[in-house]
Length: 134
Length: 289
Image: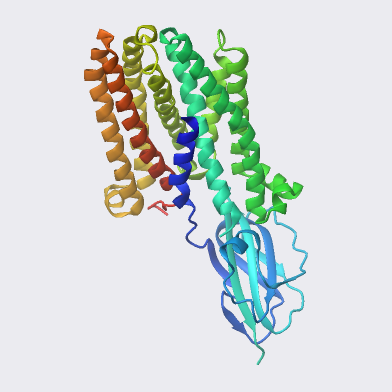
Protein backbone atom coordinates (compact mmCIF):
# COMPACT_ATOMS: atom_id res chain seq x y z
CA UNK A 1 0.00 0.00 0.00
CA UNK A 2 2.83 2.40 0.96
CA UNK A 3 4.57 1.71 -2.35
CA UNK A 4 1.33 2.31 -4.29
CA UNK A 5 0.73 5.63 -2.54
CA UNK A 6 4.25 6.85 -3.23
CA UNK A 7 4.14 5.73 -6.88
CA UNK A 8 0.77 7.33 -7.63
CA UNK A 9 1.81 10.55 -5.89
CA UNK A 10 5.04 10.72 -7.88
CA UNK A 11 3.27 10.07 -11.18
CA UNK A 12 0.68 12.77 -10.57
CA UNK A 13 3.30 15.26 -9.44
CA UNK A 14 5.43 15.06 -12.58
CA UNK A 15 3.81 18.04 -14.31
CA UNK A 16 4.99 20.26 -11.43
CA UNK A 17 8.53 20.47 -12.82
CA UNK A 18 8.02 23.69 -14.70
CA UNK A 19 10.30 26.72 -14.30
CA UNK A 20 8.83 29.90 -15.75
CA UNK A 21 9.93 33.60 -15.61
CA UNK A 22 13.50 34.98 -15.80
CA UNK A 23 14.98 36.38 -12.60
CA UNK A 24 17.26 38.74 -14.58
CA UNK A 25 16.46 42.41 -14.87
CA UNK A 26 19.20 43.15 -17.35
CA UNK A 27 22.29 41.64 -19.00
CA UNK A 28 25.04 43.42 -20.87
CA UNK A 29 25.63 42.33 -23.64
CA UNK A 30 21.89 41.74 -23.74
CA UNK A 31 20.39 38.44 -24.87
CA UNK A 32 20.60 38.07 -28.65
CA UNK A 33 22.87 41.14 -29.08
CA UNK A 34 24.80 41.61 -32.33
CA UNK A 35 28.09 43.31 -31.45
CA UNK A 36 30.68 45.04 -33.59
CA UNK A 37 33.40 44.62 -30.95
CA UNK A 38 34.12 41.74 -28.60
CA UNK A 39 33.02 42.53 -25.04
CA UNK A 40 35.67 42.53 -22.31
CA UNK A 41 33.22 42.00 -19.49
CA UNK A 42 29.72 40.67 -18.88
CA UNK A 43 27.34 42.44 -16.53
CA UNK A 44 24.29 40.79 -14.99
CA UNK A 45 21.63 42.62 -13.01
CA UNK A 46 19.18 40.49 -11.02
CA UNK A 47 15.68 41.48 -9.90
CA UNK A 48 16.65 40.55 -6.33
CA UNK A 49 20.02 39.72 -4.68
CA UNK A 50 21.54 36.42 -5.77
CA UNK A 51 24.80 34.47 -5.50
CA UNK A 52 26.18 33.88 -8.99
CA UNK A 53 27.45 30.32 -8.66
CA UNK A 54 28.32 29.43 -12.23
CA UNK A 55 29.14 31.45 -15.31
CA UNK A 56 30.21 29.57 -18.43
CA UNK A 57 30.67 30.87 -21.93
CA UNK A 58 30.65 28.62 -25.00
CA UNK A 59 31.64 29.48 -28.55
CA UNK A 60 29.07 27.95 -30.85
CA UNK A 61 30.11 26.23 -34.07
CA UNK A 62 28.11 26.17 -37.27
CA UNK A 63 26.37 22.94 -36.35
CA UNK A 64 25.49 24.02 -32.83
CA UNK A 65 22.11 25.50 -33.62
CA UNK A 66 20.48 22.08 -33.77
CA UNK A 67 18.20 21.34 -30.87
CA UNK A 68 19.78 18.56 -28.70
CA UNK A 69 17.83 15.34 -28.15
CA UNK A 70 15.94 14.98 -24.87
CA UNK A 71 18.41 12.42 -23.51
CA UNK A 72 21.41 14.54 -24.51
CA UNK A 73 19.76 17.59 -22.97
CA UNK A 74 19.45 15.76 -19.65
CA UNK A 75 23.18 15.21 -19.25
CA UNK A 76 25.07 17.54 -21.60
CA UNK A 77 25.30 21.30 -21.25
CA UNK A 78 26.23 22.70 -24.62
CA UNK A 79 27.66 21.51 -27.91
CA UNK A 80 29.80 24.64 -28.09
CA UNK A 81 33.47 24.99 -27.14
CA UNK A 82 33.93 26.06 -23.51
CA UNK A 83 36.03 29.19 -23.16
CA UNK A 84 38.28 29.14 -20.09
CA UNK A 85 37.52 32.06 -17.80
CA UNK A 86 38.27 30.46 -14.40
CA UNK A 87 35.11 31.83 -12.85
CA UNK A 88 35.03 31.41 -9.05
CA UNK A 89 31.52 31.08 -7.53
CA UNK A 90 30.39 34.27 -5.87
CA UNK A 91 29.22 33.57 -2.33
CA UNK A 92 28.00 37.13 -1.80
CA UNK A 93 24.35 38.04 -2.33
CA UNK A 94 24.22 40.92 -4.79
CA UNK A 95 21.88 42.26 -7.45
CA UNK A 96 24.77 43.10 -9.73
CA UNK A 97 27.56 40.78 -10.94
CA UNK A 98 30.43 41.71 -13.23
CA UNK A 99 32.44 39.00 -14.99
CA UNK A 100 35.71 39.76 -16.76
CA UNK A 101 35.93 38.04 -20.14
CA UNK A 102 39.11 36.91 -21.91
CA UNK A 103 39.82 38.07 -25.44
CA UNK A 104 37.25 36.44 -27.71
CA UNK A 105 37.05 36.23 -31.50
CA UNK A 106 34.25 36.83 -33.94
CA UNK A 107 31.47 34.27 -33.64
CA UNK A 108 28.34 33.25 -31.76
CA UNK A 109 28.48 32.77 -28.03
CA UNK A 110 26.26 31.16 -25.45
CA UNK A 111 26.39 32.15 -21.78
CA UNK A 112 25.09 29.63 -19.26
CA UNK A 113 24.68 30.86 -15.72
CA UNK A 114 23.36 29.54 -12.43
CA UNK A 115 22.68 31.49 -9.28
CA UNK A 116 21.05 31.07 -5.91
CA UNK A 117 18.40 33.50 -4.78
CA UNK A 118 17.90 34.84 -1.25
CA UNK A 119 15.21 32.25 -0.56
CA UNK A 120 17.53 29.37 -1.50
CA UNK A 121 15.98 28.62 -4.88
CA UNK A 122 18.28 27.90 -7.83
CA UNK A 123 18.04 30.41 -10.67
CA UNK A 124 19.46 29.73 -14.11
CA UNK A 125 19.42 30.88 -17.67
CA UNK A 126 21.00 30.86 -21.12
CA UNK A 127 21.90 34.06 -22.98
CA UNK A 128 23.42 34.45 -26.39
CA UNK A 129 25.31 37.15 -28.27
CA UNK A 130 27.24 37.37 -31.51
CA UNK A 131 30.38 39.29 -32.35
CA UNK A 132 30.17 40.17 -36.06
CA UNK A 133 32.66 42.99 -36.50
CA UNK A 134 31.96 46.18 -38.44
CA UNK B 1 15.52 19.85 -19.61
CA UNK B 2 18.10 18.94 -16.98
CA UNK B 3 18.21 15.71 -15.00
CA UNK B 4 17.81 17.72 -11.75
CA UNK B 5 14.55 19.23 -12.97
CA UNK B 6 13.11 15.70 -12.91
CA UNK B 7 14.93 14.12 -9.98
CA UNK B 8 14.78 16.88 -7.36
CA UNK B 9 10.97 17.38 -7.37
CA UNK B 10 10.40 13.60 -7.40
CA UNK B 11 12.60 13.10 -4.35
CA UNK B 12 10.97 16.09 -2.69
CA UNK B 13 7.48 14.67 -3.21
CA UNK B 14 8.67 11.33 -1.87
CA UNK B 15 9.98 13.10 1.24
CA UNK B 16 6.62 14.88 1.70
CA UNK B 17 4.78 11.55 1.70
CA UNK B 18 7.32 9.94 4.04
CA UNK B 19 7.11 12.94 6.39
CA UNK B 20 3.30 12.84 6.52
CA UNK B 21 3.40 9.10 7.25
CA UNK B 22 6.17 9.29 9.88
CA UNK B 23 4.53 12.21 11.73
CA UNK B 24 0.88 11.31 11.12
CA UNK B 25 1.05 7.61 11.96
CA UNK B 26 3.32 8.50 14.90
CA UNK B 27 0.61 10.85 16.22
CA UNK B 28 -1.97 8.11 15.59
CA UNK B 29 0.01 5.73 17.85
CA UNK B 30 0.38 8.38 20.56
CA UNK B 31 -3.36 9.19 20.56
CA UNK B 32 -4.93 5.77 20.09
CA UNK B 33 -2.47 3.19 21.41
CA UNK B 34 -4.94 1.87 24.00
CA UNK B 35 -7.59 1.22 21.32
CA UNK B 36 -5.31 -0.61 18.88
CA UNK B 37 -5.17 -4.38 18.48
CA UNK B 38 -1.68 -5.94 18.53
CA UNK B 39 -1.62 -6.49 14.72
CA UNK B 40 -2.75 -2.89 14.02
CA UNK B 41 -0.24 -1.45 16.51
CA UNK B 42 2.53 -3.54 14.90
CA UNK B 43 1.36 -2.29 11.46
CA UNK B 44 1.52 1.34 12.65
CA UNK B 45 4.98 0.92 14.17
CA UNK B 46 6.21 -0.73 11.02
CA UNK B 47 4.82 2.14 8.91
CA UNK B 48 6.53 4.77 11.09
CA UNK B 49 9.79 2.79 11.19
CA UNK B 50 9.89 2.31 7.42
CA UNK B 51 8.91 5.92 6.64
CA UNK B 52 11.50 7.41 9.00
CA UNK B 53 14.22 4.96 7.91
CA UNK B 54 13.66 5.61 4.18
CA UNK B 55 13.35 9.35 4.93
CA UNK B 56 16.69 9.42 6.78
CA UNK B 57 18.34 7.69 3.81
CA UNK B 58 16.74 9.88 1.14
CA UNK B 59 17.22 13.27 2.87
CA UNK B 60 21.06 13.18 2.42
CA UNK B 61 20.50 12.19 -1.22
CA UNK B 62 18.36 15.31 -1.65
CA UNK B 63 21.28 17.35 -0.29
CA UNK B 64 23.56 15.87 -2.99
CA UNK B 65 20.88 16.59 -5.59
CA UNK B 66 20.61 20.16 -4.32
CA UNK B 67 24.39 20.51 -4.77
CA UNK B 68 24.07 19.02 -8.27
CA UNK B 69 21.21 21.37 -9.09
CA UNK B 70 23.21 24.39 -7.87
CA UNK B 71 26.21 23.44 -10.05
CA UNK B 72 24.09 22.13 -12.90
CA UNK B 73 25.98 18.91 -13.61
CA UNK B 74 26.51 15.45 -12.15
CA UNK B 75 30.01 16.23 -10.81
CA UNK B 76 28.60 19.11 -8.75
CA UNK B 77 26.62 16.61 -6.66
CA UNK B 78 29.95 15.36 -5.27
CA UNK B 79 31.89 18.65 -5.42
CA UNK B 80 32.75 19.73 -1.83
CA UNK B 81 32.35 23.41 -2.79
CA UNK B 82 28.82 22.86 -4.18
CA UNK B 83 27.89 20.66 -1.20
CA UNK B 84 29.12 23.45 1.06
CA UNK B 85 27.05 26.03 -0.81
CA UNK B 86 24.03 23.69 -0.59
CA UNK B 87 24.57 23.25 3.17
CA UNK B 88 24.81 27.00 3.73
CA UNK B 89 21.60 27.64 1.78
CA UNK B 90 18.14 27.67 3.36
CA UNK B 91 17.25 24.62 1.27
CA UNK B 92 20.27 22.72 2.65
CA UNK B 93 19.52 23.74 6.23
CA UNK B 94 15.94 22.60 5.84
CA UNK B 95 17.19 19.19 4.60
CA UNK B 96 19.45 18.89 7.69
CA UNK B 97 16.51 19.66 10.00
CA UNK B 98 14.34 17.14 8.12
CA UNK B 99 17.09 14.49 8.36
CA UNK B 100 17.51 14.97 12.12
CA UNK B 101 13.72 14.81 12.51
CA UNK B 102 13.57 11.43 10.76
CA UNK B 103 16.43 10.17 12.98
CA UNK B 104 14.62 11.19 16.16
CA UNK B 105 11.42 9.46 15.01
CA UNK B 106 13.37 6.34 14.05
CA UNK B 107 15.11 6.35 17.45
CA UNK B 108 11.77 6.78 19.23
CA UNK B 109 9.91 4.05 17.35
CA UNK B 110 12.83 1.61 17.63
CA UNK B 111 13.87 2.17 21.26
CA UNK B 112 11.46 4.25 23.35
CA UNK B 113 8.09 3.33 21.89
CA UNK B 114 6.47 2.19 25.13
CA UNK B 115 7.21 4.90 27.65
CA UNK B 116 8.87 8.03 26.30
CA UNK B 117 7.10 10.07 23.65
CA UNK B 118 9.54 13.04 23.87
CA UNK B 119 12.05 11.91 21.17
CA UNK B 120 9.12 11.19 18.87
CA UNK B 121 7.44 14.56 19.46
CA UNK B 122 10.80 16.31 18.97
CA UNK B 123 11.22 14.40 15.70
CA UNK B 124 7.71 15.40 14.54
CA UNK B 125 8.45 19.06 15.34
CA UNK B 126 11.76 18.96 13.44
CA UNK B 127 10.20 17.29 10.38
CA UNK B 128 7.28 19.75 10.24
CA UNK B 129 9.42 22.84 10.88
CA UNK B 130 11.83 21.84 8.10
CA UNK B 131 9.10 22.75 5.59
CA UNK B 132 8.77 26.25 7.02
CA UNK B 133 12.39 27.31 6.55
CA UNK B 134 12.23 28.53 2.97
CA UNK B 135 9.92 29.24 0.06
CA UNK B 136 6.38 30.64 0.28
CA UNK B 137 6.10 29.87 4.00
CA UNK B 138 8.62 32.61 4.88
CA UNK B 139 6.61 35.33 3.07
CA UNK B 140 5.14 36.78 6.28
CA UNK B 141 7.95 35.88 8.69
CA UNK B 142 7.40 33.88 11.86
CA UNK B 143 3.58 34.04 11.76
CA UNK B 144 3.32 32.32 8.36
CA UNK B 145 6.03 29.81 9.36
CA UNK B 146 4.09 28.87 12.50
CA UNK B 147 0.88 28.59 10.45
CA UNK B 148 2.51 26.23 7.96
CA UNK B 149 3.89 23.99 10.76
CA UNK B 150 0.42 23.74 12.37
CA UNK B 151 -1.23 23.22 8.97
CA UNK B 152 1.18 20.43 7.98
CA UNK B 153 0.84 18.85 11.45
CA UNK B 154 -2.93 18.63 10.97
CA UNK B 155 -2.53 17.25 7.42
CA UNK B 156 -0.07 14.66 8.71
CA UNK B 157 -2.55 13.47 11.33
CA UNK B 158 -5.14 13.02 8.63
CA UNK B 159 -2.83 11.34 6.07
CA UNK B 160 -1.12 9.19 8.66
CA UNK B 161 -4.42 7.96 10.15
CA UNK B 162 -6.00 6.67 6.96
CA UNK B 163 -3.76 3.62 6.50
CA UNK B 164 -3.96 2.38 10.14
CA UNK B 165 -7.75 2.91 10.15
CA UNK B 166 -8.06 1.06 6.86
CA UNK B 167 -5.86 -1.73 8.23
CA UNK B 168 -8.03 -2.09 11.32
CA UNK B 169 -11.10 -2.71 9.13
CA UNK B 170 -9.36 -5.76 7.65
CA UNK B 171 -8.73 -7.57 10.94
CA UNK B 172 -11.11 -9.67 13.03
CA UNK B 173 -13.95 -7.35 13.97
CA UNK B 174 -14.13 -8.60 17.59
CA UNK B 175 -10.37 -8.05 18.09
CA UNK B 176 -10.13 -4.66 16.49
CA UNK B 177 -12.29 -2.56 18.82
CA UNK B 178 -13.17 -0.68 15.64
CA UNK B 179 -16.06 1.34 17.02
CA UNK B 180 -13.97 2.77 19.89
CA UNK B 181 -11.07 3.53 17.56
CA UNK B 182 -13.20 5.20 14.86
CA UNK B 183 -15.17 7.12 17.50
CA UNK B 184 -12.00 8.43 19.19
CA UNK B 185 -10.52 9.30 15.82
CA UNK B 186 -13.64 11.38 15.10
CA UNK B 187 -13.22 13.23 18.41
CA UNK B 188 -9.56 14.12 17.71
CA UNK B 189 -10.31 14.86 14.05
CA UNK B 190 -12.65 17.70 15.06
CA UNK B 191 -9.71 19.52 16.69
CA UNK B 192 -7.19 18.70 13.96
CA UNK B 193 -9.57 19.68 11.16
CA UNK B 194 -10.34 22.90 13.03
CA UNK B 195 -6.59 23.69 13.07
CA UNK B 196 -6.30 22.60 9.41
CA UNK B 197 -9.11 24.89 8.25
CA UNK B 198 -8.19 27.94 10.35
CA UNK B 199 -4.48 27.81 9.44
CA UNK B 200 -5.30 26.98 5.78
CA UNK B 201 -7.63 29.95 5.42
CA UNK B 202 -5.17 32.29 7.18
CA UNK B 203 -2.29 31.10 4.96
CA UNK B 204 -4.54 31.40 1.91
CA UNK B 205 -5.40 35.00 2.84
CA UNK B 206 -1.71 35.85 3.33
CA UNK B 207 -0.58 34.17 0.10
CA UNK B 208 -3.50 35.00 -2.21
CA UNK B 209 -3.99 38.59 -1.04
CA UNK B 210 -7.65 39.48 -1.51
CA UNK B 211 -10.98 38.65 -3.14
CA UNK B 212 -9.93 39.92 -6.59
CA UNK B 213 -6.73 37.83 -6.59
CA UNK B 214 -8.69 34.83 -5.30
CA UNK B 215 -11.14 34.99 -8.20
CA UNK B 216 -8.87 36.18 -11.00
CA UNK B 217 -5.36 34.75 -10.47
CA UNK B 218 -4.32 31.17 -11.31
CA UNK B 219 -3.11 30.76 -7.74
CA UNK B 220 -6.49 31.88 -6.38
CA UNK B 221 -8.39 29.55 -8.71
CA UNK B 222 -6.20 26.57 -7.77
CA UNK B 223 -6.71 27.49 -4.11
CA UNK B 224 -10.50 27.49 -4.59
CA UNK B 225 -10.31 24.10 -6.33
CA UNK B 226 -8.32 22.72 -3.40
CA UNK B 227 -10.89 24.16 -0.99
CA UNK B 228 -13.68 22.40 -2.93
CA UNK B 229 -11.96 19.01 -2.55
CA UNK B 230 -11.22 19.69 1.14
CA UNK B 231 -14.92 20.47 1.67
CA UNK B 232 -15.87 17.20 -0.08
CA UNK B 233 -13.45 15.30 2.13
CA UNK B 234 -14.87 16.97 5.22
CA UNK B 235 -18.36 16.04 4.07
CA UNK B 236 -17.39 12.36 3.75
CA UNK B 237 -15.65 12.55 7.14
CA UNK B 238 -18.81 14.00 8.71
CA UNK B 239 -20.96 11.27 7.12
CA UNK B 240 -18.61 8.64 8.53
CA UNK B 241 -18.65 10.21 11.98
CA UNK B 242 -22.40 10.56 12.26
CA UNK B 243 -23.64 7.58 10.21
CA UNK B 244 -21.04 4.86 9.66
CA UNK B 245 -19.20 4.96 12.99
CA UNK B 246 -22.36 4.55 15.18
CA UNK B 247 -23.26 1.49 13.03
CA UNK B 248 -19.92 -0.11 13.96
CA UNK B 249 -21.23 -0.58 17.50
CA UNK B 250 -23.11 -3.67 16.28
CA UNK B 251 -19.78 -5.38 15.41
CA UNK B 252 -21.22 -6.25 12.00
CA UNK B 253 -18.40 -6.91 9.51
CA UNK B 254 -20.37 -5.37 6.61
CA UNK B 255 -20.11 -1.95 8.31
CA UNK B 256 -16.33 -2.35 8.57
CA UNK B 257 -16.26 -3.00 4.81
CA UNK B 258 -18.33 0.16 4.23
CA UNK B 259 -15.86 2.15 6.33
CA UNK B 260 -12.92 0.70 4.37
CA UNK B 261 -14.54 1.70 1.06
CA UNK B 262 -15.20 5.18 2.38
CA UNK B 263 -11.54 5.48 3.52
CA UNK B 264 -10.40 4.40 0.04
CA UNK B 265 -12.46 7.23 -1.49
CA UNK B 266 -11.01 9.66 1.08
CA UNK B 267 -7.45 8.54 0.21
CA UNK B 268 -8.20 9.21 -3.49
CA UNK B 269 -9.51 12.72 -2.77
CA UNK B 270 -6.57 13.37 -0.47
CA UNK B 271 -4.18 12.59 -3.36
CA UNK B 272 -5.91 15.18 -5.53
CA UNK B 273 -5.57 17.73 -2.70
CA UNK B 274 -1.86 16.92 -2.26
CA UNK B 275 -1.25 17.29 -6.01
CA UNK B 276 -3.00 20.69 -6.09
CA UNK B 277 -0.96 21.69 -3.01
CA UNK B 278 2.31 20.70 -4.69
CA UNK B 279 1.32 22.72 -7.79
CA UNK B 280 0.56 25.70 -5.54
CA UNK B 281 4.03 25.52 -3.96
CA UNK B 282 6.08 24.82 -7.09
CA UNK B 283 4.55 25.86 -10.39
CA UNK B 284 1.88 28.49 -9.83
CA UNK B 285 3.12 32.00 -9.11
CA UNK B 286 1.81 33.96 -6.17
CA UNK B 287 -0.53 36.79 -7.27
CA UNK B 288 1.23 39.32 -4.99
CA UNK B 289 4.55 39.02 -6.88
